Length: 138
Image (cartoon, rainbow, N blue to C red; front, top):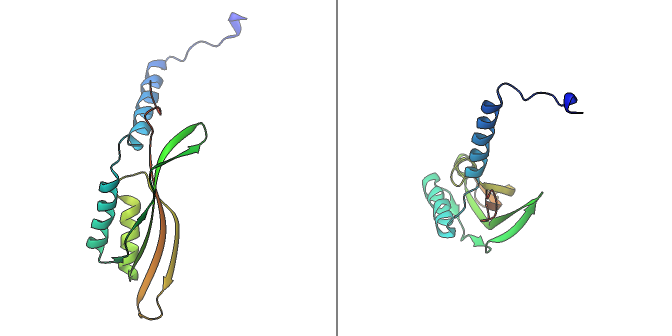
């Protein structure tokens, strides 16, 4: 039976190093401690920088959410933003590419505002994911 076991690959150390690097990269994608105030302030800064108007954000407390074998901490918020199409699309792009990298736009409904020609409104449901302390523990 032992003769049937294939030998270890010659580059086993390199494979292990690459796996450890991937592990660390995945671990860093899910920040451990996210500050709710900083998240909201970051979104409000993007609102100001892109020139859109946003009604007050509606937030929910951090809550656990299961995906596969892991439970993540999730902060949910709703925002309605309005403005010119280019400003609104810039706002959405900044949300998707900014910090925290674990911010996800779960739903987005955009409409043209009939009462304001050239203006659009986007209603968004946003989730920000963080790892609980037990995730990725060694």
